[in-house]
Every structure is written in structure tokens, then in C-alpha cells.
Image (cartoon, rainbow, N blue to C red; front, side, top):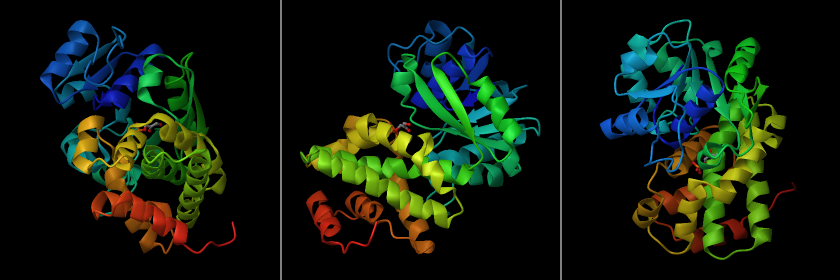
Length: 326
Ligand code: 13P
């Protein structure tokens, strides 16, 4: 097994695979991460306090990471996937299952991560699986009980991945709806930003519940237009991931800083890691516009993050919007 990308989720996923019984090679970009994993079994910059199983080893060399791997999990920032995967493509073989752990939409192309993997990796759709759901890495690192979803158009392959990542604390379900699962994962980051902004402004539970439900409504509207199963959005990859991210994710933390009046740069300095929704709010807005789907919360998050619009003004625009029947 190989995990390409040693951020918090990639590192945590390597632990899950290893705890499920297989040795794992973790590809990192920085030598100090490789040293920390191999010598002290930890990745302190991303998951302080986590002791990785001895069967997780790290390397800087993609060839070494991929040699003989049958499951290959990709866990790099969404906007760098294309460039990274182009470099790894010569090392991919037809017997590998490529697993996307990423939750974003590519800027410029508005493609989902599995679409980028198929295009750049030169692999068919049924060779790609997506693992998603309410999966906050710091909690899974502590072996908090967690459910997840393995989405793949090839149901037999989905079951094989499910088996390979089942542990006593990690319980994956399967779902053939790759489009819905990926959209749920990408859009919840944007709604998590909006939720954080509301929390940072001191708004209460009515506002927060409204953001979760109306955020899910606009996610489902886009998903259905693109061919997703509407029921996916009521499940772990939809509502489940949205609730977890709004409560405790990096996107929520970032949004909260903006809601308290901090700048984008200040919010980034506090959050430190990649905050996927900041970039994907624009690509999701573009995808929605291209498909004639209204996504008012996403539109306003994009204006705050990229057009210098004050949070209070974005809220006023949302509240002044004409309602339509639910
Ligand atoms: P954040 O990136 O906002 O931390 O969300 C993590 C996540 O995807 C939880 O499922």
C-alpha cells in the first residue's frame, strides 16, 4: 500500500491502512517528515502526539513508495494534484487502485478530483475510488470511532477497498455514487467557511442550523444537475461530513477568524494547513454558473475570500435574497 502525501489526512490514512493489516509507504515532500516517521514513528507538524504503527515507513522517492503497491491513496492539496500526478504517472500500473482522499474542485477546469486522476493518470473510471465522509484526521488519529464512505463505480473494487481500510475504529460503507460523494466533500468545505464566519460573528444556533440545511440544499441542487443521487447528500458523504466540518474543521476555523474581523492572511497564519474551501469556493461557483445552478452561500463565500467583500455585506446580500419554496 502507498499513501502519496504526508499531510494530516494522508498520515492518518496510512495509520488506518497499517492498523487494518498491511505495511504502508508514505511519500513525503520534506526530509524532516521522512526522518520523524522512520525514526520516531510520528509526524509532529501535522498530527502531534500520534504514534504511527511501525509498519508505516516514509520516503521522498515516489518510485520506492509505489513499487508493488496495489492500493495507492492520493492526499495532496486539490489544486496541486494535476502537477503531482503528472510526475507519478509513469510509475502507475493497471493493477493499482487509485484512491482519492481529496475534497476539492480544480480551479480553471472545474473538474472533480477523480476526473483529474482519470485524465492525468490515464486510468479508467472503475480503477478510481474515493474515500470520504466525516473524517477529521486529529480525531481518527486518537482512534475515535468514525464512519466513512468508499465510492467507486466498480462495486467489487469498492468492497475490496472497504475491507482494506476497516479497523475497530474506522467503519467504511460503500456507495456507487462517485459524483455525489465528491461534491458533498468539496462543497462542505465552502459551507464550513460560511458557518465559521457566522460563529465568529457571534451568531446563534438558528443561523448555524440554517447554514447547514441551506448549504446542503445548494450542494444537492448542484449534485442532482450533474447526475448525483439526491440521497447521497443525506448520508455520511453529505450531511455527515458537513456537520463534522462545520463543528471542528480547518475551514470552520478559517471562516471563524474572518467572522471576527481578521484578514485572509491572518486567518491563514492561524490555520497553517491547506484550507481547501478557500480555493474551491471559486471553482464550485464557476461549476454552478456553468450549469445554471443557484448556490447563494457559495457565491457569498467566494466574494468574501476573493473579492474583498466584508463578511457583514455578504450576510446582508444573503438575507435580502428573495426566497423560493423549499
Ligand atoms: P477540514 O479540511 O475543514 O479540516 O475538514 C476535514 C474533513 O474533510 C472532515 O471530513
